[in-house]
Length: 141
Image 1 (cartoon, rainbow, N blue to C red):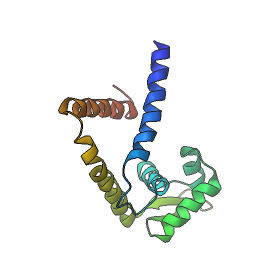
Image 2: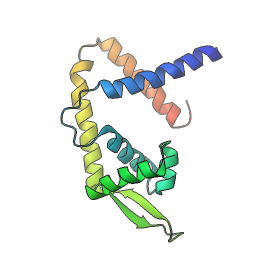
Image 3: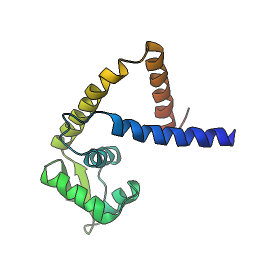
Image 4: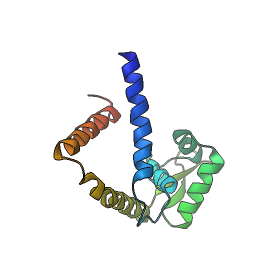
């Protein structure tokens, strides 16, 4: 059983990554890396560069570059921590949330024709699998 779960985990991660790269990129205003960073900031709330780097399994200089580009576009803002004035926290702006929503909508629009090629039972199987993953991410079954 452990081997089956390991293989299931490998397949989940591998296929998830392939799906992201497979979706047509027409209409994207941001790179996938920038969108991922914006989405992570939205999920985490106000976050320091160092905590974001750890969360993204990336270096601080790489994350700093992403944040600087997003800040230049007005999609994120920096503010001082209420508990430590030496720490800057990065937050998603209203414009950033609008852009994230637009990117997610565009991704959905780009993949819809491909999903339409599947049978209804296959689409339902994907919905069921996504529900299971959401439960897992929310900490329970």
